[in-house]
Image (tube, rainbow, N blue to C red):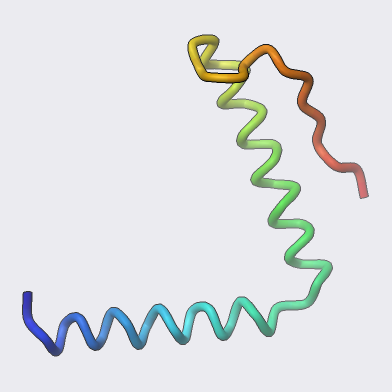
Amino acid sequence: MDKNYLLNVAGTKVNYHKSRAKMPFEEKVKIIIELQKLENEFIKNNKNRKNSNKYRRVWEV
């Protein structure tokens, strides 16, 4: 791969993580809740998934 390309990707990744770190706590919690909802849907739709019969609950805020 091109060295400049890799440096650009690394720089973009650093900037992304810095912006996420500055995000308000409330916004981070909203993202976690949305990810929990997605995970529950995947588990419901895929019975062959490992641990599919465990009780799952989404946070309520």
